[in-house]
Image (cartoon, rainbow, N blue to C red; front, side, top):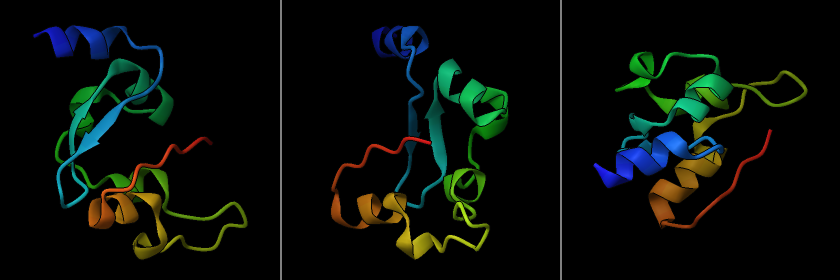
Length: 81
């Protein structure tokens, strides 16, 4: 309950995934940034929603993504867009 209140109050977008990269939690700020309703994001694969292509327009393979690296290695990444 306290964690939920903190996530709702955070001005930065926060998204949590399971080990398969599917969204398990998302705060209102993240949903707004991503252009979705929070209720629509649960269970969705995060990578295709946010990192599907590079700035030049070419595909951004999941294997090269910060999300894949974090799920494999546990390393933290902060992604700014």
